[in-house]
Amino acid sequence: MNNFFFDPESSLGFMTFTTNRLMASFLRRRMAQAGIDLTAEQWGVMVFVWNRGTIGQDELTHALCMDKTGMSRLLATMEDKGLVTRNPDPDDARRRVVAATQAGDALKERSRAVAEEALVLLLQDVSPQDHATCMRVLATVKDTLRYLAP
View 1 (cartoon, rainbow, N blue to C red):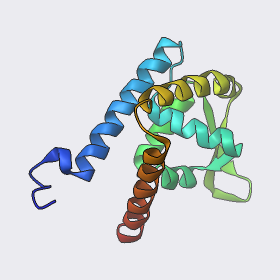
View 2: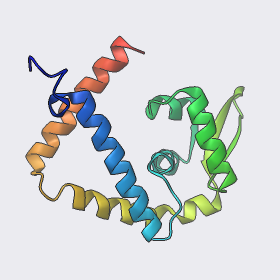
View 3: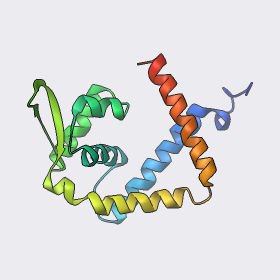
C-alpha cells in the first residue's frame, strides 16, 4: 500500500470511481436495449421513490450523496421525462417531496428486472462471501466519509 497513490489499480478511490462509471454505463445500455429511458442516476432516484412512495428532495440528495444543485437538475430532467413530480411538503412548504408519476410507476417492474439481470451478470464471478465483504467494507468507508466530510 506504500505506492497506492502511484498505482491506480491499488487505489480504492480509482477503483470505486471507474467501477461506478462502468456499471452506470452498462446499466444504461441494458435499459436502452429494453426500451427504457433511464440513466443509472435516474434509476437510483426511482428506487428510493418506489420504496417510499414519496421522499423529500433533501433526503434524496443525502441518500444519493449528491449536492443540491445536481439533485435539482436531475429531478428537473426526470420531471421533463414525466417520471416524477416535485411538490411542496404539506407539513413544511419550504421542503419539496418527490413522487413517481403514473409513467414512472409503469417502469418499476420492467426496469427492476433489467437491473437485476445486469447485477447478476456483473457479479457472476464474485462469490457471495466476497460480495458481502465488499459491501461491508464500502459501507464502513462511506460511513467514515459521512462523518469526516459531512
